[in-house]
Amino acid sequence: MSKKLLLITSVIFLSSCATTNIQELGDKFLDLINPSDTPAEVADLSEQVLVLSAERGSFTEEELETLSNDELIELAIEKGLEDILILDADGNLQNRDEVIKALVESYESGGFTKEELEMLSNDELIEIAKEKGLEDILLLDADGNLLNRDQVINALVDSGSLIESATQELESLSDDALIEIAQAKGMEDEIILDEDGNLENRDELIEALVEGAAETKAAVAELEKVGGSFTIYFAYDDTEIDEVATRVIIEHANFMQNNPSVRLRLEGHADERGTREYNLALGENRALSVKEVLSLYNLEDRVVVISYGEERPIAIEHNEEAWKKNRRVEFVYY
Image 1 (cartoon, one colour):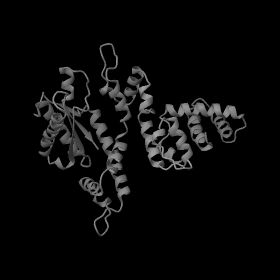
Image 2 (cartoon, helix red, strand yellow):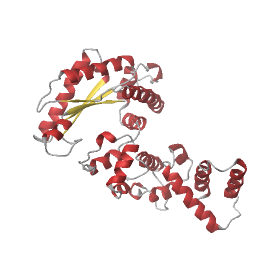
Image 3 (cartoon, helix red, strand yellow):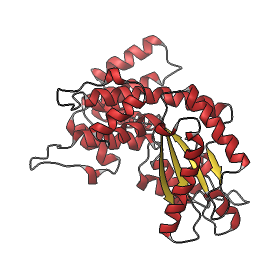
Image 4 (cartoon, helix red, strand yellow):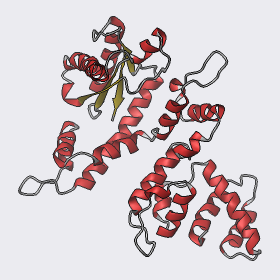
């Protein structure tokens, strides 16, 4: 473990010592940066620090940026991420940014990689899912046993923050698409074009849009707090909007009008009956039905539609109760 890595983790460790007075903290910190103890004792302390660091979600992106390439390689290996490492003939790291991104995503999933999650018991997965606010995806039998283990693991891996998700989505878009989104959000002043109309400040524009995502996150949290529903359901092989769904859509229309910078992705789903192609079309038509109602409020330019068909069920049993839960459209803001 390098001195820099030890220093960062040591600060974390010391800040966790709530019962230690200031003088003792100062003495311990001096000992850490100028150790007088034996190497074995320092090694033992660093192991304790790593455990505490993992318990808090380990390193932030800013902390990872301060580490050397060798330290990043060491962390990636510890997290079981050897497969993403790209090294040259001399062992130098070639994809630093990608490694940092992968580590951050690992920590956001609760500090676990997919491989580590698969090693946990069902009870441990349930506990982590609850800590991440993913109670709604848990499918338990009458005795409290987890029935959808694989789905929970995938959800934990994919449970990065709204801002991180927005960043990844924005970075995948073309310059023209970024310009269009910025214009739709009333951010024309953030766009810098050259004389040929090409975007000159792509990174800065993405950063500004991500800052907008933080505002979206706060607004969505308020909607959740007052009990807003983010899912509507459909009858078998149907795309009709019923009275309950209409009330939900109106609630979201009002929300979007009160928050003019938010954009909405409508994700359509179907149950497992029917062919894959048919269910993809059915999911899309359900989402389009919702968009059609929103268009009555002149919101269609801020809404995109995507269909997952039967590919992302929230209930895995093969019965009517499960099928009802899977015939749905979800509201996802970004």
